Amino acid sequence: MTTTPSPPKPSTVRVLFICAGNICRSPMAEAIFRHKLERAGLAHRFEVDSAGVGAWNAGAPPHRAALRELQRRGVPLPNRRARQVADEDLFHFDHLIVMDVDNLNAVRAMLRRLGVDKEPRLLLEFLEENHAPVEVPDPYYTRKYDEVFDLIDRATDGLLQAIQEHHGL
Image 1 (cartoon, rainbow, N blue to C red):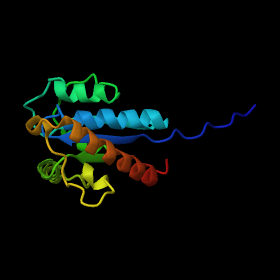
Image 2 (tube, helix red, strand yellow):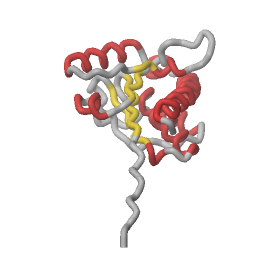
Image 3 (cartoon, rainbow, N blue to C red):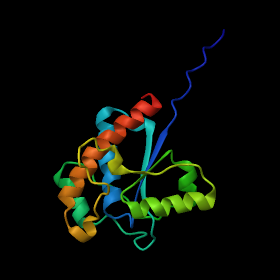
């Protein structure tokens, strides 16, 4: 008796959201994006994480105001601790999505140092709006967690669409 080979396992798409300290913007983006993947039935095809370019918050939970805004919007709260981007992340993740130009420059410098040929992208590049801002403002300083949630929510719609088109999902 012969057996039919099983179809190849679909590849995993790996997305890393990056901000400065990994307690506000990037964990919010991670949670919002995961929520969208769950609703779209695509979570099993993705690995999603977040990290910060700096280590000053390593081990800390997401900022309480970020968690409060996620909860207010019905997005499951992340059970995670802040961490710094590791060299291995830059090899492992397919999509490096950063929140602002400072993060972009820091990640580009890390990639150059390692000789990794990838181009990180600003999250708000995926906003298909006229006069869209370039950067996700840091709510740690502005306290505008609701506005940051709205920006991330709209931009992750565009990000998901772009990834689906790129990977044929």
